[in-house]
Amino acid sequence: MTPALIFVLGGARAGKSRFAQELAQAKADAAGAPVCFIATAEALDDDMRARIARHRAERPPDWRVIEEPRALAAAYAQAAEAGVVLVDCLTLLVSNWLLAMPDDEANCLNALETTLAAFLQTFSRREQTVIVVSNEVGLGVVPDNALARRYRDLLGRVNQSVAAAATEAYFVVAGIAWRLK
Image 1 (cartoon, rainbow, N blue to C red):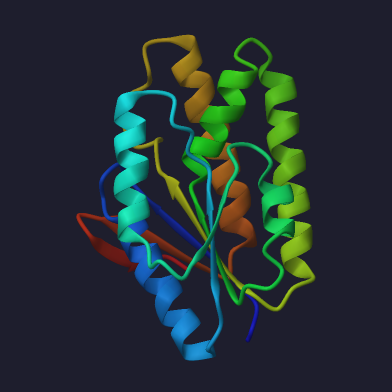
Image 2: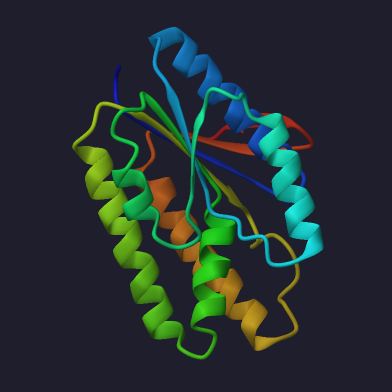
């Protein structure tokens, strides 16, 4: 299997996860390889519990699932046997880090950069297809509060880092994926 880092970006409810799952399954089928799904969501309220349940029901039952809200590099280290790894999503990863450090943007950014660097370094040593999903939050209005602005800025930086490292990138709108790279 040729190593590939595929970045899937789009707005909320745009079809990113569905596209990424279909792509992961197609890559796995072509290579005869197993899929590992790394989920970053935390079930902190009823709405998120329902979303997580819906996403679990949509995934193929033979996929290995690692649920890890912040330690992306550590979760990825556990996925060495997979031919395809799907990370869904950076949006929640950034949110989880920011909520853990709401008043310390510098340390939050450092923690995110550290885990991303370790994740990308591990990727560079493997023969895997890795698909990473994230929301594009920079196309709307400037948020009206400081925490939301910090979140938008942090996610924008993280998205740029992953996009730069990606071998392919897609922007998903209304269920339609446009190849960017």
